[in-house]
Length: 311
Image 1 (cartoon, one colour):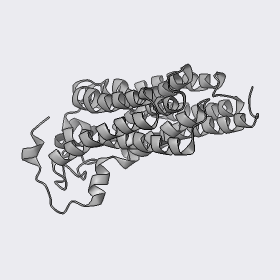
Image 2: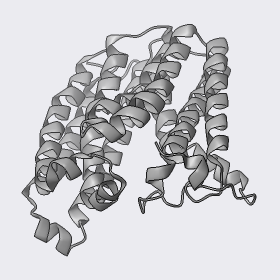
Image 3: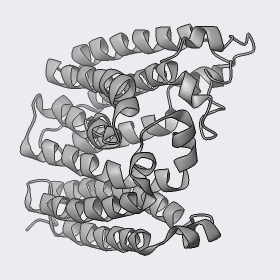
Image 4: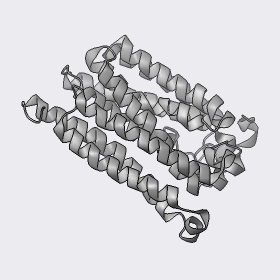
């Protein structure tokens, strides 16, 4: 990391929205949704107020890790077109403020989640923040093309945290939800990297597209998508699965594999000619893939509560 304090000047015109942007609301929304799913499908009911406060503190923890990420990555964010407008590289928020906010919210979220639920959930949240801010952001992201493979674990913990809020522990089901997100993350971000390669190259980030080229990345997307399918389908055989989830997962995996095959078959001349239209569409498809899997899990759980939809 460069001395971002020397590079970026604070702008006194920073707005409330700039501080909200530090928390990466889009990423936070995924954290909230998957944590909620983990809580909902757990076999133990939770008082609505406990559930609400727990999800709130999980969201704050996710936002805190986002602020720490923006503090550390301000130098490379200023180079990448996709991130130049963020609060720190644009100079609207000082690096020290981002760091202070991230640390304060991290401590607050972990302690409050402990008080609101249990130490297991709080411990998982603390580890998630540490893994994203330190292991991924400060180490993996700039050191290895496997950054998004290993670092994807950070985004996979929320359903485990939600499950722990309800049950006070970890189970096969919560680990499988973690694994679903973990295996989904590489093909999702590699699809993005295919049409954002120059950004990563200019910033010196060793994404797979930069270190191994787009052809190898296309192969990796297909391989990981094929490995993801049996994992996603296998959840149907657990206590949180069922025929409804299996049907939804089957359709989603067919769609995602077809998209991965389209990416694999493409050559660079065709991709450049249409502005990476296929890659962009598969990137969007991957978002629906994950979202609808967790919707299906929650729907299956709702049916099970009324004695319906089981095997």
